[in-house]
Length: 417
Image (cartoon, rainbow, N blue to C red; front, side, top):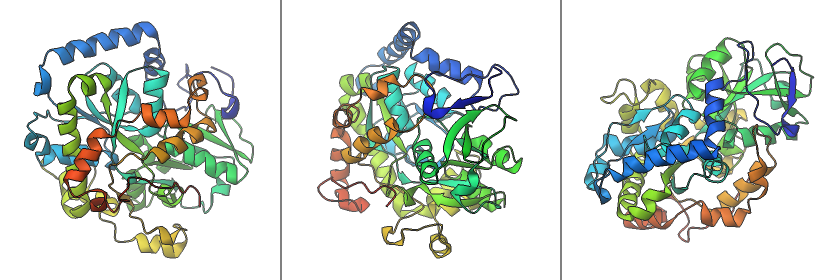
């Protein structure tokens, strides 16, 4: 592909790199996987495979098969496994399976290789309405927990003009918030091949797996990245990058990843879905109140070695003691929000889903986005999310107050306040 430029604002087709010289982030295989999932024949084959796997078990005998990326967004799923919370619910949980990219985890989920995953909330829209795979959000996994990290020489978003920034997936809160920041500074998001000339007001966006972002920043192939923790903390600890903004300082207590189940399992195995949700809610409450133990459980030195990250890096996120220094330096601008770098609150607010649908419609993403324009925010909030299980689970542990959440399960979204 020799065309040097694609404006994201005008993009309507999937951009796939045929040349190794192109630095697009997603591999050709990943893009082909995602494109194929939206095709009727491929989707039907994967659904048949998933149905066959599910039918091999009766009722609640189906094992919990977790799929995750090694980011702190997966904390509730991994804590629930590591502390035997699924077992306490009478479920059998297999060893969680780690994936490298979001494309891989989506494919494994649709084909039934895994049946409990954490997924970027905007990506759930693509899976359910773009790829038309029957699936539901049953809980949030966390709030906040992401940041824009840049080369130490960069001091403002405006200085990203003429540079390249990585996002983990087009359908992500990261892409949404980054483009909002760019627009505020009068910058335009584009996609360009490696080595192509960028205008002073253009920012080249590429998709990279989270695990590749720190090394890409160190190698100067990108000027920054916006992604889930602990990769921002890893860049800080290594002296490779610095946090420019926290995502939770842009959208107060936003969700990033959510717990995602196949609709088949919800309809045919409602008790199984309830028990899965119970375990995840209990895991969030435990992680919220046992930060250092959570670090030890997730670290590469832990018994399970769920992630490749050190305790030092994970503690900077999960047991942060330096948030006040970010407030003092101006990185955190909304001191009154009194947030943690990452926190845990499982209830999926309808107001957030509605705002997210409105936001993604004004965010440039690659691929066929026609399905997005047909989505009505309040419809999606009721259709995409099944809150029955998480409400019951939250009430069983003391109600929303146990998570510092409103008692009436309602809130007002505060974005870029």
